[in-house]
Length: 518
Image (cartoon, rainbow, N blue to C red; front, top):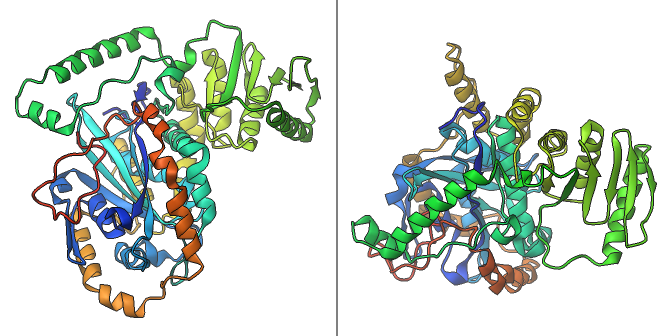
C-alpha cells in the first residue's frame, strides 16, 4: 500500500455495477443489508446468510441528504424505515451500486474515498448505506470494493415518502453510462484530492485502444483451480494477463498521453456516445458555450463553413468548440484550462477525456478541481498531485461532512493523519459509526423481530400515487438487461456468472450475487 502523498500510477480495472432491489426476483432490502454488512437475516420464512464474508468486511456508514433527520444515519432506524416501507409483492426496495477501489489508496482511506464518491447521490436527496469489503484477488493482491444501497424514496422527517422519478432518469441516462462515468470521475477526483495517482476509466476497450476483453470462466472453474486442479484456460489467461501488463507498462504512462507529441490537444465528454450528435444538437451546445463565455468577456467568432463550431478568444490563446470537443494548440495555460473546466461543468459532463501534453493535462485537471470535473483517462503528474492535495485537499472532507451526521469520515481521516504524523494528541471528539459486523447482526436481527410492530404502526405505508411510479420502474429498467450491455463485459472483470445453489441457502431465497467473488 502506498502512502496517500506518493504518486504511484494505478490504472484501475474498472468495475462498476448498477442494480435494483426487486422483490419479484426474490431480492429484498433486508437481504441486501445483510449482504453488505456480512451477516445473516431471517424474515418471512426466508433465510439469507452472508456471515462467511465477515472477515472481509471493513465497516460502513450512512449518508443522509443535507437537512434530513440525523436519526436515519443509525442502522436500526434505517432498516426499519426502508425494509418495511413497501407493501406490494413486486415492489422495488432500493438501488444498488458496487464498485472497485484503487489499490494505490491506503487501506485506511477506502471508506472515506467511497463515501466521497457516493456524496454525489446523497446530495441529490438519496439516503446511502455504504460498506467496504476487501477480499483477495486472483493475482495475490487485494481486491477492495464498495457495496452501497440507495433509497428510491425521498426522506421525510418521519421516514421515507414518495418515490422520486427524476432519480430513475439519472440511472437510465445513456443506458447507465452516465452514472458509470460519474462514479469513475468521483473516484479519480477523490484520489487526486488524497494525493494518489490513480484513475478509473469506464470506457470500452476499443475506445481506449486496448485489446479485446479476456475470456470469462464459470466460477466453478475458479474453485477447481483453487483446489489445485489444472485448468488450461485459467493458466492461459494468467499468461495473457502478464503479457498485457508488460505491454501496457512499455506503452506509456497513461491513455491520455498517447498524443503528447502532437501540438493539438483535445478535451471531450467522457460519456461514450454510440451515435454522433446531430448538427442541431451540436449547434445548441455551441450557443450555450458562447453565451457562458460572453459572461466572462470572452469574444467568439465563427462558425466555420464545414459545420457547427465557434472559436473563443481567451487571454491564454484560441479555443475551438465544435459541439463535441474542445481543441487548442500549444500549452493550455491557466486561463484556457479554467474556461474548459467551467464549460464542461455547464455542459453537464460528469468527467472528461483529455488528450494532449503533460503540462496541458495538469493545467486542466487542477483547474477542474473547483468545478468537480476531472479527466478519467489519465491522472495528474506528481507535482500537480502535490499541489492539489496541499491547496484543495480540504475539499475532500468538506464535501462529505454535511452528509455524514455522525462524522465517521472526519474521524477516519483524522485517525489516518495522526498515524502518518506520529504525533501524540487528544482523541478526536467525533462520535463513531464505524459498525462492526457483530453490532450489525444484532441491529438486523432486532429490526426483523419488530416487523409486526412496524406494519401496524408505521408512518411509511404505501401511497396510492406510488403505484404508477413502481410500474414505470419495473417496465423501464430495461437498461439493466439490455443486450448491448454484453459489449461492456470487460469492465466487470470480477463479475461472477451464475453458480450452483449453496447448501447454506433456502431455495426460495437465493443470495444476491457477489460481484467480487471469483
